[in-house]
Image (cartoon, rainbow, N blue to C red; front, side, top):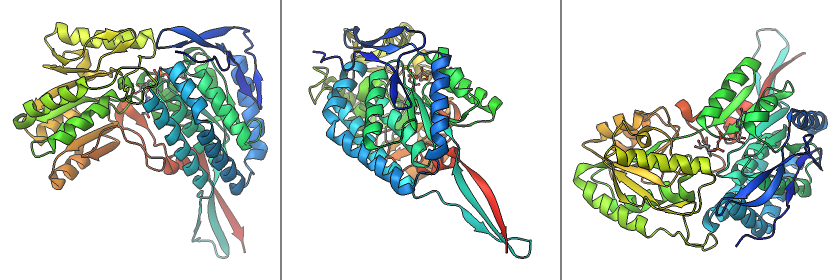
Length: 479
Ligand code: NAD
């Protein structure tokens, strides 16, 4: 049962106030479980984007001089408030985004950790002193915040990304304009209230709602926006990358994936078959790091597949608020059509459904395919749903070659009891992140999170964000 609409109408948040869209139009934000209208959000235009950027730019003039202890205090307070308001966040994540309770609680807990880790960043922007060839010269370099950072987030983890992109940027003295996914504007209002109540100055955080394909370029291309921190599809990411290159802006892109999970014959098969369930089916496969390609050494292939299918058939598809439910609805019709077409295309070309393949309303059963060939779309493209393919392999070298045969390179996993083999694989794979004997989806607030190839550019996390969202200044003193 959907809960009370809260709020029914979402306006943009500019200079610490809600602002109706200049278009005076609102779009429907649907509950993906049954496609009923959950909320209505402002159909913002270029004009609203400009106001939000101007607000962030004007706030930056004083925010840049805020003290580390102030930013640290606001971020810690925001983490505390998020903990207190967890119930409210759960309701919105479930009803607006189709999250299960399991995934909503994970997002809330992880977002708190991100805020606390961001608080630590406030004191960690360091420069250096350097020797000089000029007699009597004292030479140093400092890092300074850039200014306005545009933060653009996807639908699948709207709280984690809405917090991470903005909190890290603001921790080091930048101000922000968030463009949340059009599927998650209500989450953005909760974030705005969190920051406001935590004490962040007006204008340091702003958001606009609307459609990225209409207003995105006016945000990323705005002359006062100094950097773009984007998480979303590779297609949109590549577009933003070109635009930022043209305008000379720094960019962090966290994009799509087709992550491989490799199981060698000396692995703990029981653990691998249990982890492979979480690796792809959590959040109904709407996970950038989802293990959508599983390579298993032939001698253990049948054993792995049998256990994997058995485990997958036990995955909960009940009430979203039941803590054992793992599979919720896919976010929208476009996404459902894509998942359906990937399964149908594979089956039409000879793949076998080992389990799953059925739909219950907007939910797709967790689906395992075998007999998948490179000619099938599911083999190479990101499905972003609860679908994976299991392939037999004859050696770790073959697994590595197949794993690397992808335009993506976000996360990877290898299961083996031979640490030398595992580390060699980890070094040789084209991937931003590799996990040995652990699932592909992993994240911690302080690690360099990100991918290579079409999976992204730059790294999220303290080091990557300080690198991309501050600039060096060289200062000398003639003694
Ligand atoms: P999407 O690319 O369709 O949309 C993401 C955001 O970009 C939305 O807010 C959208 O409004 C905005 N946008 C669209 N066009 C734009 C433009 N021209 N300029 C600026 N912004 C624009 O992605 P999605 O469907 O919301 O999310 C799913 C994708 O995100 C998947 O590919 C998934 O792998 C990826 N993802 C990656 C990570 C990661 O950390 N690597 C995490 C989560 C999701």
